[in-house]
Length: 151
Length: 373
Image (tube, rainbow over all chains, first blue to last red; front, side, top):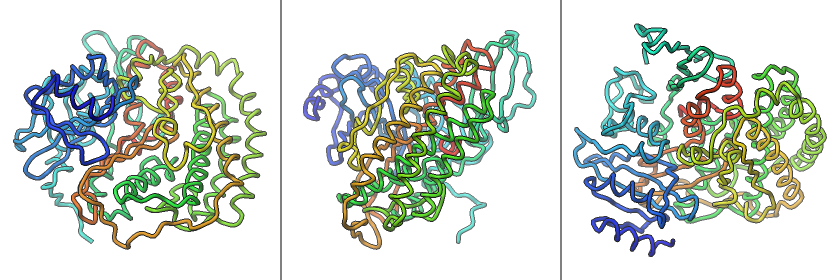
């Protein structure tokens, strides 16, 4: 499907979705309430068949977090980006997508480790790179490392 | 990450063994916690972070010219291709393209890097599975490529040769001559490679039918590179999303269906032949002209998000740049191939013997700094 067809098909299953076409890839911004059902549909519905999650990350926009999911269909060869805005920075949480794409398990652990986003119903949510007692979340913009030396 | 105070034998009678972080077959500081039922693997849990430097955080404070060179330290066996990925992402943001001459030089250097990386992998695979001599032969051939790199880029491994808009300086006058010599030598030696390892009975018995990864699992775990192609998943970025002019050269995407260690081995061996093919097509056809497009001294990308993917020897490397219009990236995410490939390890090794784990680790070809970043 091309961008226009994708847009109308996505509106068909989730009318609340909004679009951002300024970049190279189509961005779909989704409210966090219907998020898990939407992602399950993208995987199971034959017209989407988004079976390949190749990049999962988070962006810290200082007043909110933005979760970013890059999806590709290996059969239809179309791709787009799903974004979810997390308003509450102190208690950022979102449903896990481990059950849909197995690769998400480690990727979500990385985001939990470095951003402090909690993934609900994740089978094994622990820090990935850093020690369990590491203070703070390094990839947040307000993170201060006391041992860092400015040159 | 503490393992103190944990039982060596679990309640189900499973035996817990720690492999690494200083184990010879992990090719770096990777720590695997393995649950064993007798000699059979029940579960594997990777523990990472021993060499985590947070290159993503460092990049947020570097300029668009400088952050490229931090990536040489990720997958140090494919430093040139990592640099190229970042440079392409910056070029995408600026809306420019490298000059025709620079594009061809980039492909040539990239394929030489791929050859060197696969040669190192071939030698280490032999070493892991009990054959010492492949290591020496592989390093002899790899040395020739490293010398070519040194002559042109000034460095053997961390080349730092790619800049936005082209390459840093023109190729050395000896480049074409020496590359042709090295390729001719290598083609002759490749038959010896096959004789040494491919048809070896011990090697075949240790790799055939071992560590099978199905195509469905390969897709679900986001596996890329030769590891995925050995399971029949077509994913070569050079074919799917061509960059730097790969659409103009002739080469085949290598696919196998078995998905076991031997299929992964054969895929990489065949890929080396394809790399030779690409180099032979281009080495006499480097276009004349500038090696670098003119760019401003301080590069500023427009607001937005840019994703660029390239094919490294291990799979798809993605560079995701978020720009807020300043002179350094607001956020950089590296989608590293080794990270996703490692996540499939537990599924591949489950039900196999602990000796098979060494064969699986060898044929996934992990580079740990690439995973830890």
